[in-house]
Amino acid sequence: MSRIGKQPVAIAKGVEIKVADGRVRVKGPKGQLEEAVAPHCTVQVSANDVRIERDSDEKRAKGMHGLMRALIANMVTGVTTGFSKSLDIIGVGYRAEVQGRKLTLTIGFSHPVVVEIPQGLEVVAETQTRLVIRGPSKQQVGQFAAEIREIRPPEPYKGKGIRYVDESVRRKVGKTGVSAGS
Image (cartoon, rainbow, N blue to C red; front, side):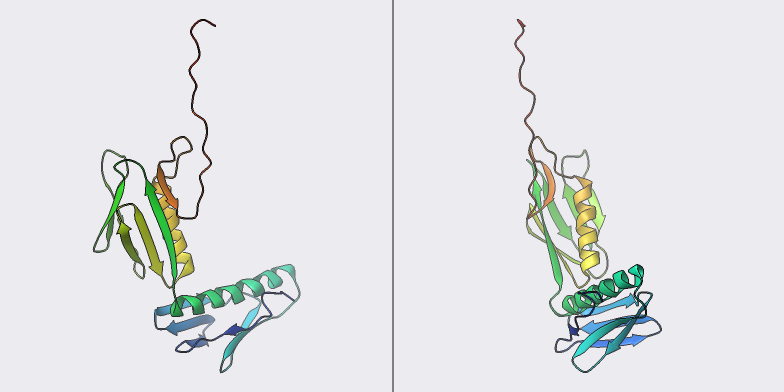
């Protein structure tokens, strides 16, 4: 049995979980999330926890068992406390600005890059060089943070670009001058 899959998911106060039509719906103070039930899995909701069962001992069924449990646990965490990712913008003149549902990045291109903020996410520019992305869906927060980082990933020589706060960039040594007399 999957070690992760056999652990029950505790239901926090104020969270409502429903299973119908092959989908799990989790509703809480920070929003509502929905996910399809993985193949080979069944979800049982009791008064204070959720248990996931699987129908066979095949390798795929075992993998889906642990995945489904992790997804439901992340949904419960997301609708109660939410998830966040922080990005640092490093470079002279590089900055970010949030106006309504648009994020404007000035990051060394000939034009500012304007990115539409997806529904369900909140993006806050704490400073001109620090962005915080918040939302109930761990997948959506991580995906949007990765898309922003991809616009100008950190380069290894000067370290300029967009990076996660906890990310360390391996720096390379640049060119060295070769003497003319050799």
